[in-house]
Amino acid sequence: MQIQQFKKPLLMLLVAAITSLVFTGCSKDNDDNNNESGVHLKAKIGSKDHSFNNVRARWMEGGAFLEITGITASGEALSITVMNEEGNRVPVGKYTLDDNTRFSILSIYHFMEGNVQKNFSASEQTVWNDAFELEITKQNNTHVEGKFSGVLVIGSGLTTLQTITVENGSFSAPIGNE
Image (cartoon, rainbow, N blue to C red; front, side, top):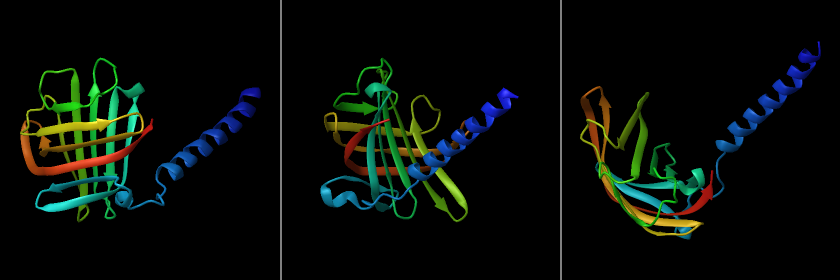
C-alpha cells in the first residue's frame, strides 16, 4: 500500500519534468535572428546559401565536447561537434576527419524534402566519401568563432547514396553549458 502511494507522486513529478523539458527545449527563442549581434552560422550548402537562426554553442562533458548548432526558419538544421577523446577542453585549432588525432568531428545537416527527412552527415572512420574541416579561430568560456567546409553524405551499408557540399562556412556563437 505504501509503495502505491509513493508511485503516484513520483509518476506525477516525472510527467511534469518531461513536460517541462519538452516545452522549454522546443520553445521558440525571442532572438530568432541573432545575426544582428554578430552571432551567426552560415554556409553554402549544395547550391544554396544558408544563414541559420537560433545559433548556439555549448560545452559538454566539462569542455571535452564543443557543439555548435543552428536552425533556419524553414526547419533546416546544422550541427557541428568536435570531441577531445582525452577529456580535456577542445582548444583553438584545425580539425579534420580521419586525421589520427585525439579529436573527432561529427557534422549533421538535415531538412525536409516533401514528407521525407534527409539526414546528411560526416564523421570519422566511415566507408563513405565524407569529408569535413573545422577551424576554431577564437574561443573563450563564453564565445566561439571559426570556419568550416566539407562533404556530407547519406549512406547505407557500404554505399554512398547522396552527397552534399558545404562551402565557405563560418560561425560566431555564444557558448553555454550542457
